[in-house]
Figure 1 (spheres, one colour):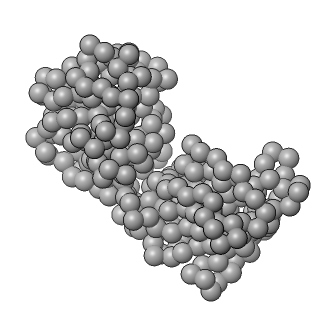
Figure 2: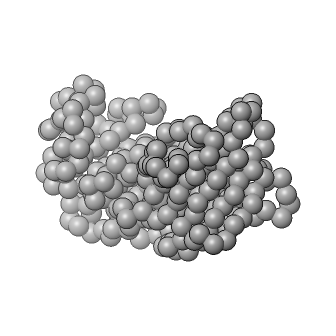
Amino acid sequence: MNLLITPNNDKPDIYQNTLRLCRKLHELKCAVWMTSPDHEIYRYHCDRWSDDIGELMTDCDAVIAIGGDGTILRSATSASVYDKPVLGLNLGRLGFMAGLEFSELDLISRLVTKEYAIQRRMMLDVTVNQNGRCQYRNIVLNDAVLSRGTTSHIIDFSVMHNDNVCLQYRADGLIFSTPTGSTAYSLSAGGPVVDPAVKSIILTPICPHSLCDRSIIFASDATLDIAPMITRDNEVFLNMDGDSYYQLEAGCTIHIKKSRQSAKFIIIKQNSFTSVFTQKMSLE
């Protein structure tokens, strides 16, 4: 089995734990692949390396991401382009996306014996249009966030739902999340927790200028078009999965819908969503 390993080398103890993983995989007769920068660190434990992550993604059987939710998120988004499944090994704090804790490393043998399930997670397609032309496009697994700059005032937003319903918001920003992202920024902003099995798009305002403004859960086949009021004194940014930023221009619209792509997660432990949530949030 050919496995692409994507460690977050900024994590404490990542080197020792990655070596533990490599040794375990070699015991299971698996080939360990990494990208060139990681090869410089783990060169004696890597069987194949390449400057081209796309080449490795195309040829591998699965991806193992080592780190926290951010690391797993980035790896799952990249792997979705190649329809490859991802197993997250948690070295972070919450690890909502992780399939295993590092203390459960022995269970990784189930990956080789194929004692696991694949869970597909919905993603969002986000397009910025200006004068009818696409200026920017990306996909997100967690969320797309519209927010003001540090010196900007509160923003007025118009949201069209399926081209015929207009919602008006005055807020510091808007969060559009998938069910996977419902436990991320949306939750911190007061949004609902949604089981990833429920396909939907969640809209949560950030610091709305109204006590009546609450989150709205749309069906997965909904299309949303957002028009932020941008003036000379207002900067508005589009943040994609907390990783990439795009500054919006006056007169633009943002089109959001369910993506044709989906992220594939390897599920080794058959825990229910509610048990994972209560464990991660220490609610038990």
